[in-house]
Amino acid sequence: MDKAQIRHVAELAELSLSEDEEQRLTGEVGRILAYVAELDAIDTTDVPPTAHVAGTEPLRSGQGWRADENVPCLSHEDALAQAPQAEHEGFGVPGFVE
Image 1 (tube, helix red, strand yellow):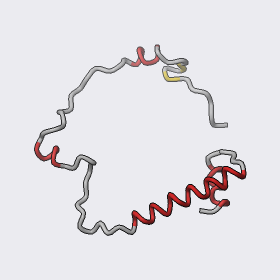
Image 2 (tube, helix red, strand yellow):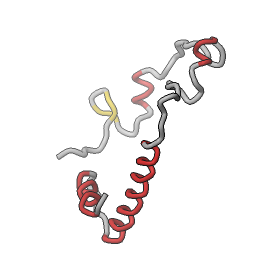
Image 3 (cartoon, helix red, strand yellow):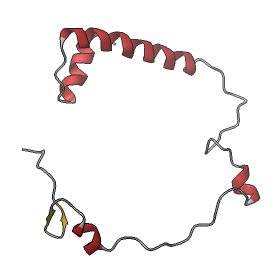
């Protein structure tokens, strides 16, 4: 990734970067992308897919994970009572779109 691409992404994110920051990020992002390319080159043909870092055995055996259960939560009124600002029966937040 070159400086022009870093600058473009920064503009999309509405970030202002100094020349030093652009230079540093160009190197850092380049190293990250090189590492991702290394990972992409690893042959995972015979590696079984997993849906979770703990594997899928707890799902099959029924052990290790608790059953889902409904638990009470805050009411709408209680949640709004704790909000710094409530508007129109919802949470009030500062505007961010012009």
